Length: 150
Image (cartoon, rainbow, N blue to C red; front, side, top):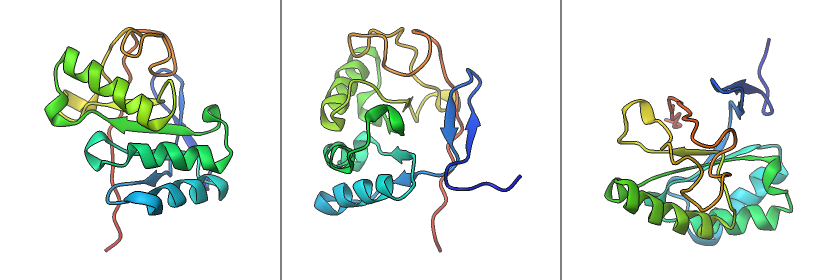
């Protein structure tokens, strides 16, 4: 079956993840916010960012400006290498949530962990049990592929 911009696949917990999303690496300032808002208003259902990209605040601004509800798209971020360890990851993730203007992300990746697994914080990472969709404490695993134009 052909894929389109709204096609999804299922993670091993049944959560749906879009095949296609907007990557925000190297996207800065108002250009980033505009790109996120434009993408969400033109069919994209996933936004990917990371602490190291330095644009989580602009991603948050962009999705808010889009008018989309938070539960209508998939949001991914990544823990930066310098924020490894439970306390440091927890602290940095709380900052990410504030910058992203949300109380949860759909996928939190830890690039240094084997298989890029989501950190199993049992819902207490952000002080609630919506740090990732699904059951508190459940690990999600996802291989991450990046496609870049030549």
